[in-house]
Image 1 (cartoon, rainbow, N blue to C red):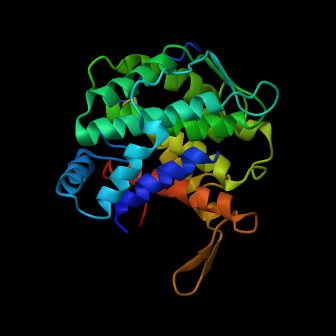
Image 2 (tube, helix red, strand yellow):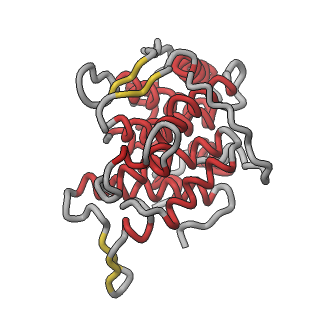
Length: 293
């Protein structure tokens, strides 16, 4: 299967499952490539060519996108100041459904040039970045910060040069609502509290680490913050939690087989974890770093 299709499927799978005055200076480092998260400009050029020539299975995939209720233009975003995942007042569906709409409309604009879809993606992203101030709930808030932080950054990365898209506002929201109080705190601890929600390091399944690593890598690239990007990369390589590579894949077997950390749990969470690691690897790959190897 084509790698672009796999990456897009991984993103869609992760979609379905599951202010603070932060103003640290960015470290001087080599510039990131944009767009450079799950999709590069070369990927979009290939998508345009395949759809334009009617090549299969790309045309069938494109038609599935066109028929999705989440890819239609003209949507009014449901942005709200406080999003809760887990516990009383859970309203997280408002966020993840609008992120899916922003991402799918962004794809339609980038591949077909449809400004109606581009305007819709832009307006959804601007509404949320200008409204959301708090991501809270029970411990599941760390799943929200990871999954939806990395998805939001991916949609924003596609739209970063679109007329009227407020890049700075989105960067500030991702840093101050997602990264600093939640992603960074969960992985390595900071002024907001101890790592892993002050729990025993192996209390949480691999997906909790991996979703927050994915957000950290994605937000680091989108915000041109190599120091943040390196937090996610370093944790994948050497972190103590279940999501780092040697803990997420604890058993190797002959003939290229291995066992995932959540294999004894259920198939859905196992596939999600592999997908998240694939997403992290792909974002790093698009910045010239080989984590697949």
